Image (cartoon, rainbow, N blue to C red; front, side, top):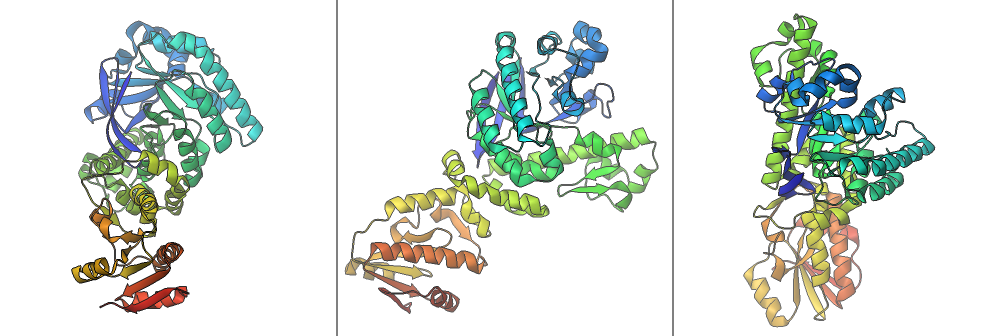
Length: 494
């Protein structure tokens, strides 16, 4: 299997995943196909732009094993694209056990010609730490045992990393699984977290794994497919998703939007312009036979998910993913909290994220100060700022040529206050990203005060005298609130 990274933004990647002569672009959603109940036929998925899907090998083995072995999985499903087969771990999660060994299910996946397979892991299903530890230990044992079967195949193989919301256990599991030769790693058992809308914990789960596994491996997030959270998960470094939500929601007349879920009975006019919503009215769909209604709503749900991933990918290409998330995560309080939780991982994200782009960056709110480019530039400023002279001047406002010349002649170091960067040496005002930053004039007052405090405190540590030139009356008031003390002179801008 090959994985080529084409574009990056934050921890997100646009990539090309190649296996057994088939190629898909990531990030992508793998619609879950239940072989016993196909709400949408695989061929229809292919016609509508879905080049990969995931199905359950255990269910196929249980009911149609001879037929699938004889004809192959692609012929059986009538799907020419990439097929990923799960091993039955979901049934273990739901029922506690299944009547098949790991060797049997691995060989079955190989025998039916799947493109990518999954070992028979043990999901973290309970709430207790003891249960989580047991699921990790057994999954690691099975992962090691699987190597003798999977290592010489031409398939790609997924290594699930268990631990659930126990972050330290998840990191431990990731460390052990990363030692083995899996093509793709997966964050296992996020179902309970997702059902609770506990997106901050999901951030911890994904990044605890992301910090351990090599970036050259794709990362799969099991059971995630709601449009509202896909952009955040992609930004954290997830490349593959699988979900049956499109069909499960359709069964209950639930209609996906980019911001949440609506009941079909409550909709007067479809807000979407996909082929389904352009063709039918809500009342018409409600009057249909249940099977027809399910199929149409499921198709819409998939179109909406596909649309969201396309928006996310275009944001990556344009290096606008952070700006996209600043708007996108306002749709749910937990999503906003999750976006802010990323601040906890600033050092890791800044280290892995691209640090240059031909595009400028936008500072839209206080959370913009934590984007990787800003964090990286602030670190560079710390290394750049060193005491060279006795005095310095911090300009709060627009700097002109007269000020530059005067300070050069007087041998006074010159800084300009630029939130959220702080005190920026005048010689670095055109450096990236400072030189390509557009800052909103309505940053929250507390953000400006915090940045001012940090800038002034730093300069006072380095210089005997700090002079501040200010032209804005509002900033003057803020400065007085900060209570600037010794060796700082506040004067009018000239």
